[in-house]
Length: 347
Image: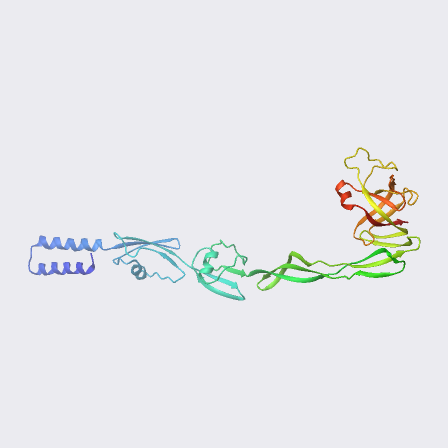
């Protein structure tokens, strides 16, 4: 019951008393006034940052009662309370904000913020935290009074760099040109590649550069020089052959017709020299190339390289300037077919 109604009842009681109304009636009204007065007292229980306080007030409005009893708060404080005391009771919870110092984006500021997790509190103050940004405390850390927080901005981006792939140089021999003559068969062309780097910045300063990809956008084209080795006797004597496997010094070069053979699917695999047939052991005419001779074999234009080999076998059809190259499979033999090759007899 409001204080105004209480006041009216009390005033009426006094008037009746002056008019000599019966004492029992006056006593009853007085007791009623006292009852109304007791019923209008409200009890407020306040938990201020965990500290419990209880006070009473004739005011039902919770906010007014708090201010009457000296409680103050600001926008950083969080209050949980009913608007009015119900049945003479009200419970209030106050979680006080905290004063923190934040260093970020080149500035250091002191501010009051609501209590809670750092990752929730800072964005609420308009300070966004990027996914890669680094905090001096954990993102789930609860802010405390006087806390100092450093926020480092971490950004990454990718950039591409175009670079040149230098072309190689290759020398091949040819029986089409006389010994001592040479010509450029194919001009060299540099290649090009694009390398992708991931750049990491901390507060705008580059701290890491990592290679994450590379794509060749143009393959280099080798410069091919043809060097003549043709002599009147269809051989070339002495010199150095330059190949993919390195440089070999040879004492004689012979142009031959080459075929290929294999032991795949066959029961025999022993060569004329008694060795087990394998890649690198070839069949020759011993009158032209003696058994045991070491050699290097490739096509005149360098497009096919058999590599180093040893004369270890013979064949009924291998007569004169003919050789038979051993290969692992029948399919390789078919693909090779019959070709002109140069045999460099190694020193």
